[in-house]
Length: 299
Image: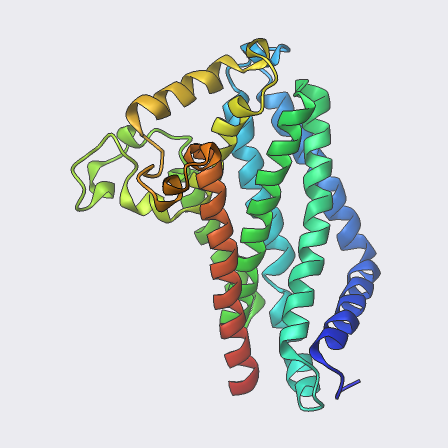
């Protein structure tokens, strides 16, 4: 096995990681129970009206859906490298692929994150009467945030040597996302968060590094774009989208090279935000693997 090509080793590692994950039945069961339970709790709290169109708290539900995604991804991944590091250091001496281990770990965690995403959104669809097209889009954005959080979690797990330190870093990742993700208006905050910026109608620079800002903006604008009819658009969401178009309060700059291709989709806010999130996924995966590789070979 040790002299097999990388593709064979990745296949072996995938089977191995799936078996390990399925063996942890209690943790797996809890993770699959927590997802629909949090969805029910959020839907119950933020169902200010049984009619989705009139539900003024629906944007809050969407925001905490993304916060839940960050929570799921971090909890699933933040301890993985810590507990396996010594094992991987031993096995790489025998020729086991370090990249195969890291990629398979990433893939398996993402797979179970996808199941959590589906469970969460199915429950939300039932209790909030969300149209299927919007449920599908919400699921895509939520899953992408889980994958981003898995990348962050594996990065933290590669960076730290103890589970205690990793646990203490989880709030440092989640709380700034809550504060600067866009749910709380930036103009209600102290102007010092704008640092060198003087245009207070845009998002502050520190908020632009938060992946949830782009996810929240994408899910808000996408809810309008993927609504089949005007009578199905949530009133509060529609007002937020109008505010985005007029004020650019949350939005990323539309002056982008993508618009030079003259495709209509490239001018869509939800699409541009998804591109940014994909960039986060790729960037954090690469950085996490580099750090993991150095930790394995340097101790």
